[in-house]
Length: 133
Ligand code: FES
Image (cartoon, rainbow, N blue to C red; front, side, top):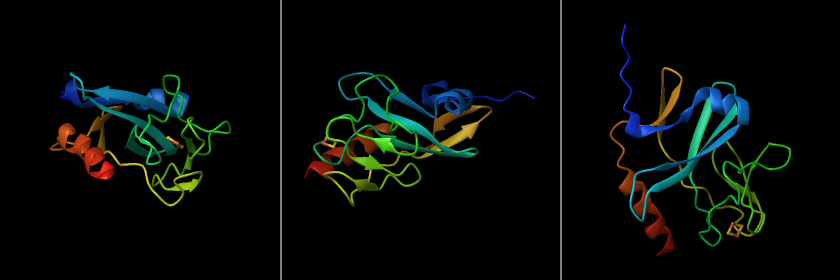
């Protein structure tokens, strides 16, 4: 049986997540690609968010794939220390407490995590512009 994967939508492999817990991704070209992160909440449960902090709109990480708190329990913005739940992106501590990371719809196929079929990366990017108001 042949399984076809839309490689243009691949965010990371499930094996990378199992090893590292979290992976960053860039999807698309040009000045405004979709940038985000994929995180394993627990075995079998994966979430993805845009790499955009609701505090001041900075990227969450300073180093590639560096999105987790020291103990790995939370996602963390390394600019001013906001901490987010992996499961739903809710900020539970820091300057944007009560706000959420912007979710990225995903699906899994044959060991890969992909942007969900039918989701327009540009439409997701536009969410950031609406958040900025
Ligand atoms: S920009 Fe993320 S906590 Fe300030």
